[in-house]
Amino acid sequence: MKTLCLFLALAAGTISPALVNADRDPDSETVRRWVEQGRVLPLEELLARHRERIAGRLLDVEVEREHGRIVYELEVIGDDGRVREIYLDAASGEWLEEELED
Image (cartoon, rainbow, N blue to C red; front, top):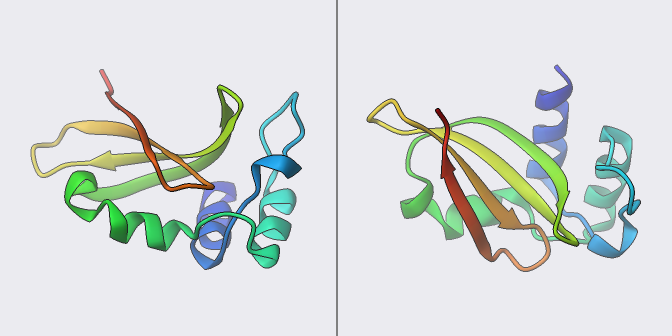
């Protein structure tokens, strides 16, 4: 339920790296506030921008602090049944990394 609320909040708006508490990932209330303030690119925009590379069904979305950036971590299952984790910079929309889950 927490992930669904976070996903819905992210899909509606945006997030700012400058507002992140340096020692932890943002909680759902913080994310909701950032979404309302329009501080990062909307998740929907990033999904559209990277549609071909993301191809598959979105299973989960998290917002995390990674290497000094705020990132969307997407978990996607492809048509081949393989699950990938995709990391996108929440402020710029830059594709950062893709990993296959075991």
